Amino acid sequence: MKKLLFVVFVVLMLSLSACGGGAASASTSFEVDMKEFMFEPTDFTVPAGKEISIQLVNDGAIVHEYVIMKLGKEVSLPFDENDQENIYWEYEADPGQTINVTFTAPSEPGEYQVVCGIPGHLEAGMIGKLIVVKP
Ligand SMILES: [Cu+2]
Image (cartoon, rainbow, N blue to C red; front, side, top):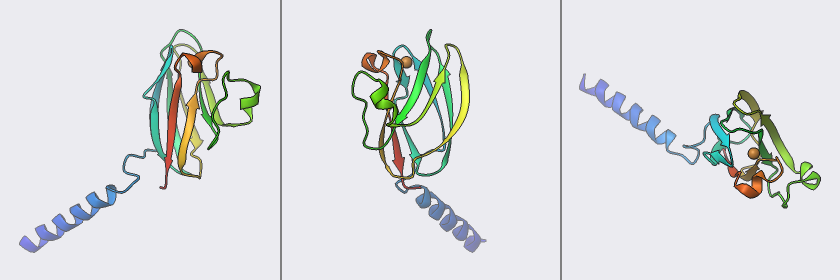
């Protein structure tokens, strides 16, 4: 019996340490609240190349967008047509709307800028970060 308990203990410790790697905080699903004029929370960590479920909640009174820029691309203010080609993924939510949608996380680890693409919203503080880590 003692031996069995020891085995259980070792297995537990191994599984705990397996979770302690660099991707410990990476998640394949997250929820973001959008309102005037912020994302909450601002940052998310996801595993590279995995399908990510995102719940976009527009708690505001006007339309907002969740726009992920490509790696190494940051919006040059104001957000306009020049920035369109640098978008990795985007989705829009009407006021009061909750949207469940999926996208594939970028395959390259790094920090991706997240902005709201509605004119003036980025300037007002709608900025965040998608942190992509090795799965
Ligand atoms: Cu906005």
